[in-house]
Image (cartoon, rainbow, N blue to C red; front, side, top):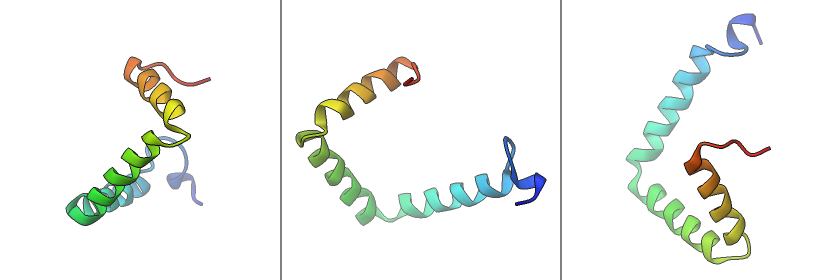
Length: 64
């Protein structure tokens, strides 16, 4: 990894991430499947923990 690829301002990694996110969002089947997966997770054993994390993130408070 070069110095240009480290730390804040890693434009190459940011560009690749954004490209992947756009490709994912265009695939409605994948988006729908992940939505169903998330809904099931909320109903399952980890539901309370996920809801707590959602509330904390909505407040803008980092988890310590």
